[in-house]
Every structure is written in structure tokens, then in C-alpha cells.
Image (cartoon, rainbow, N blue to C red; front, side, top):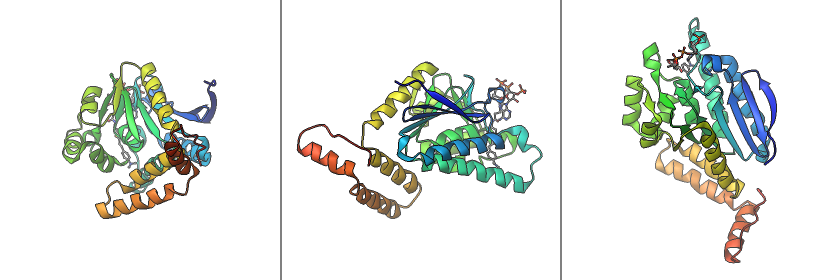
Length: 269
Ligand code: DAK
């Protein structure tokens, strides 16, 4: 595997490349990677830059630096003097980051090693799925601060764990460990340490990467766009996406390879 190359997008967000894999790290460990407006802007810039690369990016890992936190929430200090208008502006920025992550055609795995709280859990929920170390913990503690989730938590958490469990987590603000997070379906897999977390996430992206990239991108688009829609409207999206698959060379190749009893050679178009 090629040596990762690093470039700085902004002081608090690093993007490393390893071929078609991108590792995006929120690097503000002194504040447990809390999401200040600057961090959110840098993250948006990083994700938009990856989106601009199109099919050159086949998978993304999103993580936090320092070994204590993925992200311990929105930056509480920067909230203190905010006007309602500034609050709304910050909320919009947070939602733009989530939408940019969901809009990437490549799968994004949140690699959580430590706290994923408040806006941090909401950021992880905007990724395709969450892998975590056993020592990680998760929660939506906004009610402890007189807030409610403001970065998609009321929308994406119920989708991930069901309405009743989401209500319990949001109303109590309590923290759960990785084992409980796996048990309720919030976390897909947990690992004993950071090294095995990243090895596991990379292995999953390699498995995905062996498939037809346009099909994976179409599946992501349909899954993301149909979330929360009524059945009829959601199935229309699937029908359109299924039709779109027939526009791709990889679909022709995959079907031909099956009929000819050989392995497919996908080209990603
Ligand atoms: N914001 C700012 N700084 C934070 C932070 C946060 N969310 N979490 C931790 N830090 C800072 C601490 O202040 C401390 O800084 P210094 O005092 O050393 O300068 C440093 O990180 C280390 O934290 P601790 O000393 O507290 O470390 P402990 O191990 O004792 O405790 C902890 C770790 C994660 C349990 C604790 O730090 C903690 O409870 N943190 C707050 C967690 C939390 O409540 N998170 C949810 C924040 S509310 C919105 C959009 C979204 C949201 C709201 C509005 N719109 C845009 C309108 C979302 C809201 C949230 O996320």
C-alpha cells in the first residue's frame, strides 16, 4: 500500500490520502475535537474538496485525533454569546457538513475512538455507518445544557436506533458504551483498539471497493434520499436508481461476467 500523503486543509482538519482512500481527521484534541464554527468550515471545505475529486475517491474514514474523543460535541464555549441568528447560522453550517458527507458518492465510515457526544454523535450519524473502539461512548447530552440536538440528531438518531430508543437517549442525555451502542444498532462493529478499528474500516472499504463503484454510489444515493420518505415515494427513487444502473458499463460487465462464468472487471463507469 502506498504511503499516505498529507496536506493541511485548515489547522483543525487534516486530510490524508492513501490512493483512493481519504482519511479525514478532526484535530483539536485539547478541546476533545469540539466542533467550533472554524472546525465546521474546515470540515465542509475538506468534504467539498473530496467531492470535487469525483470517482478518484472510493472511500472515506472520518475520525478524531488524540485518542480520547471522536468529537465531544458542538463547541460549548462558542455557543455562549450567540444571538438566535448566529445560532441559526451555525446550525445551517452543521447541516451543510452533514449534507456534504451524505452527498459524497463514496462510502464514509465514522471511526469513533472515545467520546461521540452531541454534535459529535450527530456528525457520526451523517456518515454511512459507525465503527468504534470498545472504550468509546455515545450520547446526546444537549438537554443537560438546555439545548436539543441541533445538527440532525432528532432526524438521524431515530432512523438508526428507532424512535423509542432515540427519545430515551435524547430525553435523559445519558451516555452509553460501545457494547450497548452495538446492541441497539447505533454502531455497526466495535474493536478492541484504534489500530484494529482502522484495520477493520479499511478492510470494509476494500471489500466495497472491489464492487462496481457506480452501483455503490447509486445505492448510497437512493438509501440517503429515501430515508424518511413514504413507501411510494421511496420506491420511486429506487426504481429511478435501478434504471440508472443500466446506464453504466459496470452493470453490463457484471451481468456479462456472471453469464460467461468469469470474474467481472469493473472500470468504475
Ligand atoms: N465544547 C468545548 N470544549 C469542550 C467540549 C465541548 N463540547 N467538550 C470538552 N471540552 C474541553 C473542556 O472544556 C476541556 O478544556 P480545558 O478546560 O482543558 O480548556 C477539555 O475539552 C477536556 O475536557 P474535560 O476536562 O471536561 O475532560 P473530562 O475527561 O473530565 O470530561 C467529557 C470529558 C467529554 C465528559 C466532558 O468534557 C464533557 O462533558 N464535555 C461536554 C460534552 C457535551 O455536553 N457535549 C454536547 C455539547 S452540546 C447547534 C448545533 C449543534 C448543537 C447545538 C446547537 N446549532 C448549530 C444551533 C449541538 C450541541 C452539542 O453538541
